[in-house]
Length: 357
Image 1 (cartoon, rainbow, N blue to C red):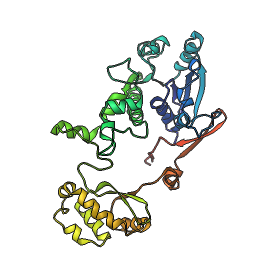
Image 2: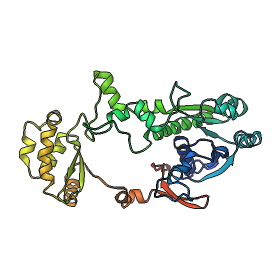
Image 3: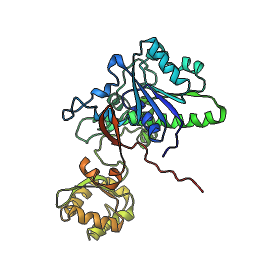
Image 4: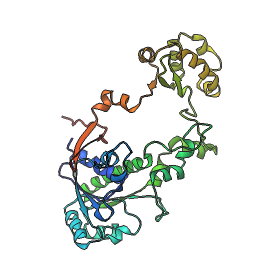
């Protein structure tokens, strides 16, 4: 899709959130120029390599969010290089930045200066904390500060971070939405605008039902592993006869009866401890023990076949190799050459658009 063909984006951001927004526009046909600070050896994620990665090649982390960008190294303390960026901004539609507090002004890329010099420009700015502007803000820090780590993990385990930079990605989505709104406004008025997103506010906006549960009851959500606090069996993990892992997402009484029918165990579906969702949540530990016995009698493939036929919501827990054996994943890979290295990443665009006749 080349929905944004002709759109020019200047990406002066680094790490994940800002660069992911740049990649989003690049995937949809925009011309994205990425400027990296030569004095700091470019984007820091170039060096974020695992022991299994070659030090001579571009890191997979950097590759994941820098697709189809025209990359330039500049010295942000050099007036000539700053002027070079300003030349590009004169014909640009969007600029992306995530500078530390004070650096944007030092580099002549702050919101006030750019708004006055380039009134047509849409500025997309990533911040860390909403009010603590000088505080360093990495993803794990925000996962801790906004409650994600506290509610993530097992009941008897410590607070745990998500295995992805979740807050960065949530902020990237917020910034995309804001820039798209700004583009609509620009089409109407011809004027640019400044869209600012903090990692902190993006995280807080995503607490959803967990936040409402606290706000409406005063109760603090606790770690439950994969379990859902309001539904059972939902999030319970079971091992099949061939030692594969299955997670259930049974969201209604009818689905629970179908699950029991799959195991040919109608007595469980009629047991007063399990006839309603409220009862199942109250007695989920007993229910788990009963269901685990049933799962140990059936292979993963047999369960999957019957569950699909009967309409029982489930998921097979897959490792990354198994994920990419599925068509949806294998057809979502984007390949690109960055500075001579072959790179791969997942498409950040997950929607399809069909134009009406």
